[in-house]
Image (cartoon, rainbow over all chains, first blue to last red; front, side, top):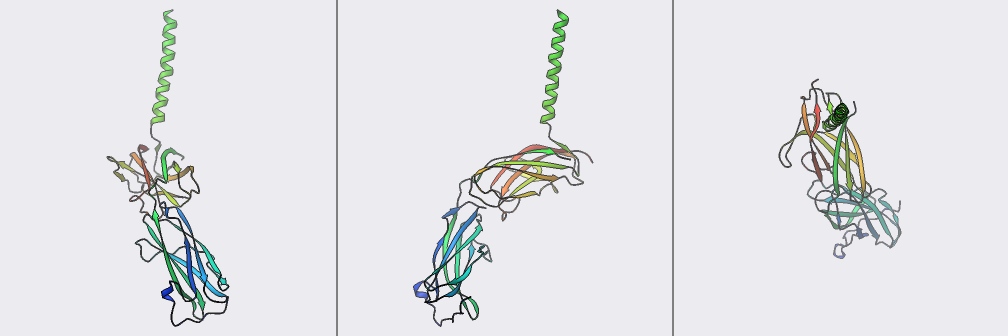
Length: 141
Length: 138
């Protein structure tokens, strides 16, 4: 793990980025069918001049509390200055439109510190996912 | 000549009777007893790109239109499915008929839902089968 970063007194809120990291992209489909597996990627850029530890996570906002977290395995790494961390995540599409909240963190003496947040909406697709549902029965005893 | 004609009519009639009998047997819903297992063979076409779903089979009473009243104890036969690509899928669900199930003929409902949906309350697709099984006296 890279050396822990000091927590800055002022975060760079006005730039739309965090103190040391910025979520530069959330790659996700515009729509998905209920129950389908939605695969997304979150890209976080290291705004610092040298290597720091960066982590990305995500949560889903669709009217359920607490917001379910998104499955993001292998979501942290040491990233050189100016470099980016891209994390692959997935979730099961609920029955409602969902807003993805992506979060970035940098590694400090206090552990990972929240730094930046971006959102992206995924709409529920209404096109049919299943058709020709049939069932037959037989006794197997 | 008359005897041959009668014989031919009898043979044809016999074959027809056997055929009709076989047809009735085939049309008759599977008869089962409590503690028997009924296999539900569910077929569907999946049009998505992959996902996690639940197939639910319930036995009960198909009223009018889409109104279905499940019989207690026969309302939670479920199996998870994870179709990965558009294709035709077929799964088998074993339905154990519990002891004490009233003897009668039951309709069936099969539905596909997401894991977060409430079984019996929500579904993506649903179908009914009238007179699906007959439960005999214990």
